[in-house]
Length: 127
Image (tube, rainbow, N blue to C red):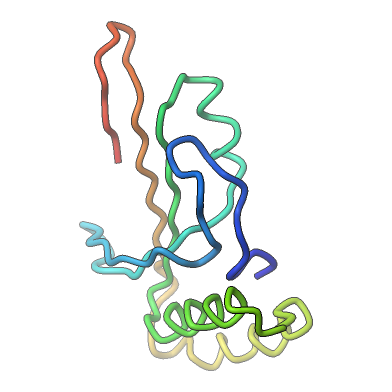
């Protein structure tokens, strides 16, 4: 919750990113459609240098669209300068998520798009 609505560290191929923004829907074969949004993970720093990746983007999503879209709205409020300390409200938000658990399952989703060159120098896009 600490990065929701805040400018994230640039990553290869995506210089300007904000936490829990750039939402889109992705259809996962096993778990169905999920809203996805920008997340911060160590792989964004580690993989490009190690494997020569030219572009990398990581998104995550929750099954419960209401929770996902609520966090997305909070991200815009924070980005617009409204001072909301989500860390301070984390315990309440966690309790609220438990209440809403009955409207979904424990199936979340993560999605990574990676673009780079293979050993022969050919550009590859993997997702």
